[in-house]
Image 1 (cartoon, rainbow, N blue to C red):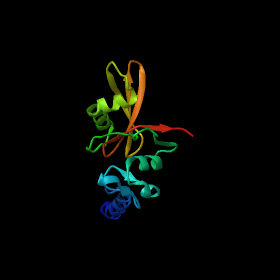
Image 2 (tube, rainbow, N blue to C red):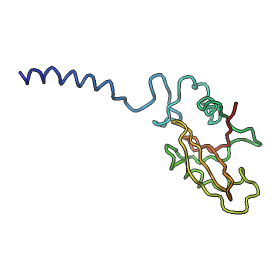
Image 3 (cartoon, one colour):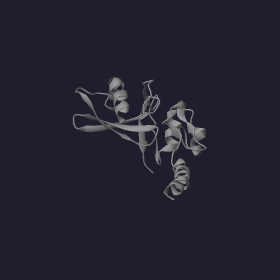
Image 4 (cartoon, rainbow, N blue to C red):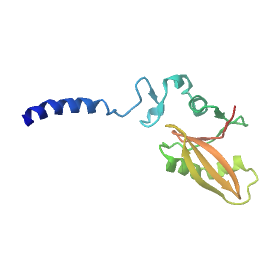
Length: 151
């Protein structure tokens, strides 16, 4: 009797669990930004995938790339960024460019403090310059840019 119950229950359990396992890749109907398997783009942002600033404006509510001259883009790291450590590494590798945009007259050391994941594609990286905190945003493709949020 126990073997018959096991033969009936085991396939049902396997079928139920199969629905819980998602294959890697974008969610159904979504896309991957630059082909990075961790960087799923919601379908409503498909038209904004041309650059990091456009995509950021679509994916992060009430935020956008800062309107600065010549551009909000501070640097292009050209390495994939999939987590907070990689985001901080991107900023550390480009620290002169980043600190020069945040604090043009910086005379002491700028320190990368921490990173926060905003979503699958964007990270905010916080820096300190003599007690003054600054922030830059890093995209999954390594683009580092100035951003702002508000209403």
